[in-house]
Length: 545
Image (cartoon, rainbow, N blue to C red; front, side, top):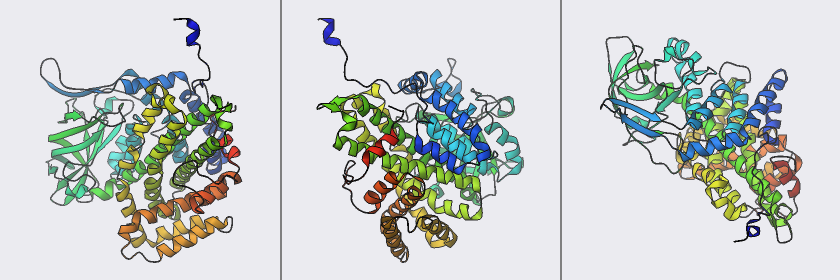
């Protein structure tokens, strides 16, 4: 066959060799908006360095290789000894090493730490999402450990280290440590109070012996885990190390690894405890209260992680349309394709803007901001994670058949996209959590309404949406059946308020017209044609073209 038949034309080049941070205008502007100006230059430099690495061909290859070579469980060594080890591809370790050295497990004790970390997590998760699981849990374990100052004093420096030190050894012998979490069990799922794992007190103060199972235990090669077990006083939180201080392995039998839809690079396991040593964290019978701060932090990471998937999907779609020609011109110049891309860009920017606002609230730490987070985090977790999958599907369609093949990376984004909606409580759990806060915590509702009210008077569609929301909030009797609808509206109003205040006029106008004003269809690409869609798409481009 003549070689001329293989001449390649009209294909977009790979989206590599760019700065994932600085090319994301919504992200870069959000960091500048919320961060103390004294910290801005250093933060930009660090995030841009991470962004350049994230946009490199090498990092792209790491992501592919970590998923094409998933972890392998070795329950026994060659002699029949139980070892319960999981082997990972070298690319997994490279991804984790870069995440840790970039401060993605360090937020709680440095100025602007949560915002800087959230921005970095959003950047680096676009390379590969699976390794974000141990990164997220390690970061989120810190506030739970602070329920026991003595434990926190020992473990917090290990968790916030910038050194990734792989391998199973006593944590005291390592330059850095990672944390996992074990809450759910077969019979209970999200209803952790139905857990059957038992904890028996030992002679040593604070020490217990655990017997039971965990249905989902992610990142089983972590150095320690926060788990829930039943004592006579009720559900209690425990720290369970993989390796004890004398060098012996803790009883931590990995039964199997989950065969998941996506998230292939990350090992999610079923674990049996049988005489497993654990150290109590917090008071007996107060396990949920102890671990709830960890759950809240990982829920925020679900929002940030979904925003990262959405941003990467939009970047790939806009990049493809910029180079691809069809029907006599560039795809990006076709009015209907421009409508689709603009609609996707709006969804992505709204998610990013909301995620950064929540991270900034963590850094503020005031009573007002803590009350705001009580409602805003589960509402954002509910809505942003649910918008991820339909967005990725539509972005994949922009690439057509090219997007349906594994080499494009889009199928991996699609398989990953439902996970954050499930992890740390599915949609109903989030909606009910918002409802509980509305009914029991008036300060939380007041903080939320004050936040959205900052934009009142700037857009009549937003004003109308706020008015409608207030009508719904006035009567919460029998609200459970409509909790999803209520939380969706709250999330949209919050996003609209943020975009009206912070986004360019064309972005805010398009969001309010479609999401709040009702001038929108049931699929992406149905924005009002009279809007400045070209400006919205140009803003979303992953690089200057």
